[in-house]
Length: 195
Image 1 (cartoon, helix red, strand yellow):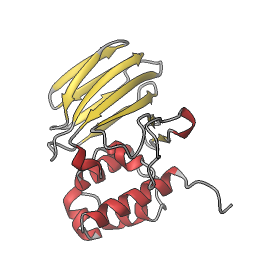
Image 2: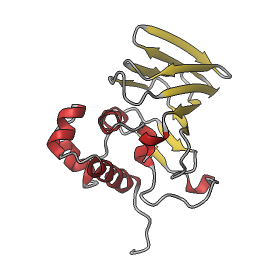
Image 3: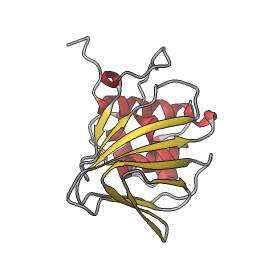
């Protein structure tokens, strides 16, 4: 049992604790900064909660990092290759969507790739707006159809379509069909935010 790798919730807990400590934030300060209660942050940091994607996005924004960075291992991989077997998968307990961090963890690259499997009729709405540093994304639909809404702008994307966006206003994802959708999100930000 001692050699068991940590669960993904434990990994998220460690990353949130480490990022909060790196920034010198108390639980109260982070709670005030990101709009998540102190008690919920404490539960997440102890690995006693299965937070939703929306909640994790609020934490990531409050910590000044992309959501994908919360899934990185505390000790980064030592090479430039990310093997499929080592890529963490996480299921959002609310929508059921599954995300897989594809990019090698720990590299100094300002680019991160995430694959999403989005269930039929699933919806995820992120309330966060502009952030520092600015985060750019490109959403490339590999299979199926999704609708991405940025503020008041809605984009219906089918297999092969790609949408470029900046995370500077509320964003929602919706699968309007009865089939699973699969898409890749390429995230780019300044390297300083990936520490």
